[in-house]
Length: 428
Ligand code: MN
Image 1 (cartoon, protein in one colour):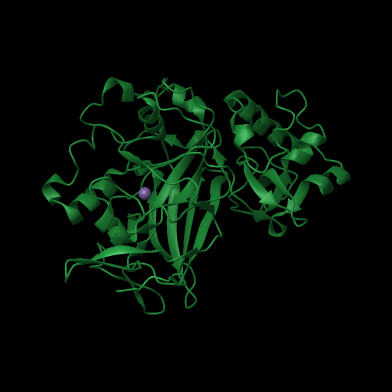
Image 2 (tube, rainbow, N blue to C red):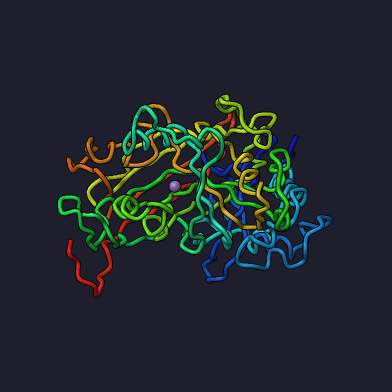
């Protein structure tokens, strides 16, 4: 039993009803305080907690932490510590803020900040980013749309968690707006490429995990060891320009249709906090190769939602699904990633791929929800969406629900701004 997961525990910090951040959560992130100082932190209810300050005040006494591990502007040094240390720190935070304990008023003033006085930053410096393709329904839908529905899954799909390497440096935190990207698209009527802003801008609803320090180059991580190398998870919106993607991806895969931005939710919810929400995934048939076999419950029951808002309407639900629908679990993903000896570093991000459920209203992208634009969605102001418009905002939330509390991820929220002016002619 992980101490911090005690479902009966209450905090002396007030926690609003149905908060994503009860004392059982204790996520990790990075925030900017009102005085512009950046610090590593956690959150209980609507209070952000400065971990470097707690450390300076000696609250982590007895835990084998590197002295300056919290004196940083990202979590990477903390991620280099072992799972045992991550767990000791989270358990200690639960203890410090347990209702049975008290904190000096001066210490409170030094370490606690109302969340609305802070700004969330990137939690990690992402070294490498990989995007998997692990939802069978999503792979099936895409196969049906662009290939033969009878052979929707490609021959390798049921044998390995398919993935590509993405761009780490364009991963941005929730609240950072993006401009509609421009690029080459095929004008099908003339069979000619043109250059201009994407007409088919889409979101992809994904979950991602963040790694601790893996093994050196040449070694691999088994599915049972993978537990020790995954720190936590966040929501991941893998922005996609479908027209750019369609024209460029042959034969090497995603490039400019993807790398202009990916957005993440800023609080990393630990794998430990998600422990009570482990469930069994779909039985994998055909049988996997031995290196991908695993024991125990490896999928996660996390409710996911996507909403769209604009200047004319409030956030409106367009998809509701669950991360349990992933066919390949995160432990298999990490094992597959390292099975050739590829090294894994603290602060790598690995995203699941679009998560789609079986029902058409549980698909994780507009590509699927509107079936490549053939079934537009009507918004509350009467306008239709095949893909995203300028000034649309996409909101994604994720939440695991227990009887007495919920472990939420907050949200990842991003507004689309018009394409930037370019000096190149738009033959569009
Ligand atoms: Mn993706």
